[in-house]
Length: 147
Image 1 (cartoon, rainbow, N blue to C red):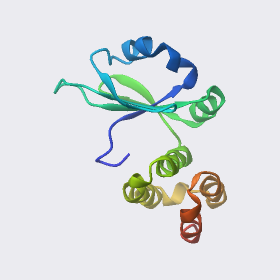
Image 2: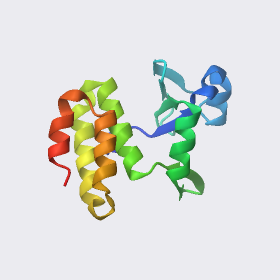
Image 3: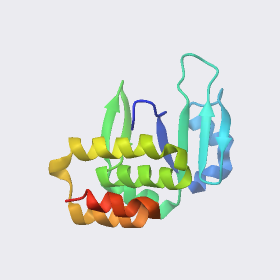
Image 4: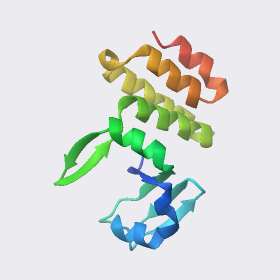
């Protein structure tokens, strides 16, 4: 996640119809959806004590795959799952595909992830992610940069 990004959460799309319960379970009762699509909700808080949060709604099978490869971390006593490196890159590519204005920011984040984790990258898996999720106009450039 880039420094300028808001915190993001992945939620199974089966939770989406219960938005009020979803807000309550995430502690977002005082927040209002500032932006919403079929697969995305951005909650904004009027409180200086709460951060805005972006929620990406994904299907249950995708959620299970991502959870199976995620790692648990704790921050201020709160446990949360962090997607695998390849899934983070896929999410960044998906974000560019759905909002081209994010291109420069998310490509910079991807480049930083690749530099920081260069010894952990499986180039064939990365090529599969790029082929599957990158916008067509970026696929060729990204593939050239994968060793």
